[in-house]
Amino acid sequence: MEKTVVELFAGVGGFRCGLNNVTLINDKVKENGNWKFVWANQWEPLTKSQDAYDCYTLRFGKEDVSNVDIFEVDKTSIPNHTLLVGGFPCQDYSVAQTLSHSKGIEGKKGVLWWAIADVLKVKKPPFVLLENVDRLLLSPSKQRGRDFGIILRSFLDNGYAVEWRVINAGEYGHPQKRRRIYIFGFHKSTNYYKHLSKTDLKNIIYNNGLFYKQFPIENEEFKFNFTDISKNNFSNLVDISNNFKFQFYNAGVMFNGKIYSSKVKSILVSGKTLMDIRETKKIDKKYFLDEVHLKKFEILKGSKKIPRLKPNGDLYFYSEGTMPFPDNLNSPARTMLTSEGSVSRTTHVIEDYYTKKIRLLTPIECERINEFPDNWTNSGMTDKKRNFMMGNALVVGVVKKIGIELESIIENEM
Image (cartoon, rainbow, N blue to C red; front, side, top):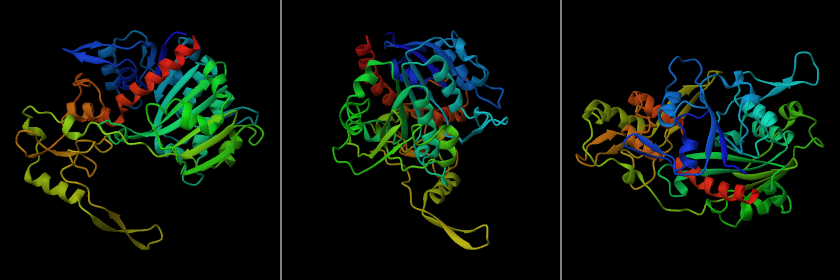
């Protein structure tokens, strides 16, 4: 089985950088892995500038890279592939009957999960690896677990089993405490599916699934939960959307509609910190904070109780605790957001290597936090845009580790 990949919502190429251990030397890209990327799609709606696409194609070339709305793409035109990857946003995944009241089902327009589901239906890739924010397991607030249940049932309806794990990159030696859910789907036609079907679901999480080797967990099971989303319990996706709710934990498996979810605890691995990724050369003065901005950050990062009014007019206090100021260099970075570099409570502020003065992160440091090659996003974007791209990106080193296990799985298919 060839190691071919299709990348949806490609961004600036985080999955490709991770799977192929990409390096950038003198602005020349070298892919050091064995994965062949046969097609990718990156399109940013509501804007004329396509900065992520421009960065991706600058590094990897424009051949077989699509820059149109994924919903406009004829899914049959996508090349066959072994692995489908993508980081898609957490949205409202609710579904309903079609207006004609027939048996047809439709999801909300523009919700990107349904583009993935269309690819699964048409192309049936043997393996799928997706990334999302961990709150996906809890949404929506009024029907906890519904959205992830819809996703799992979509996989089931297309012939897949699924394993998932919430991974905090900082707990496994990476320079950012970025917590994301990784969703691994494997089709029932694969040897991997047939092999795992012979074991119990808990054992997949703790002993022989995709994640347990590279991201070790303690043997103790803190909490667990079980349910069934097969047609025996829910007739279709509309039934799931209307009636399903469930307490998902940070690890789990779905096989033949049976869901086993377990609350697991990471076995911590020490590794890179902010000090390790901090630039040691002289930094442009534009990144340093003047007295006015120093005061603003001190207030933003300090503890506070802010009076606010409820919709009914009742008074309550919104509280925030103290944040380290400047950030602790002996710890991994906090989760980087798309607002990085702005005057915000969540922006990182560090002590400079040379001057010992307080400053913002440089774009290179933001790239290093996600383990991209230095200057990866130096493609004509502003610093603000470069930071935005990294706030949207994944931790490349996590994908690299997952890729090691995926290669082994696919080699066993052969």
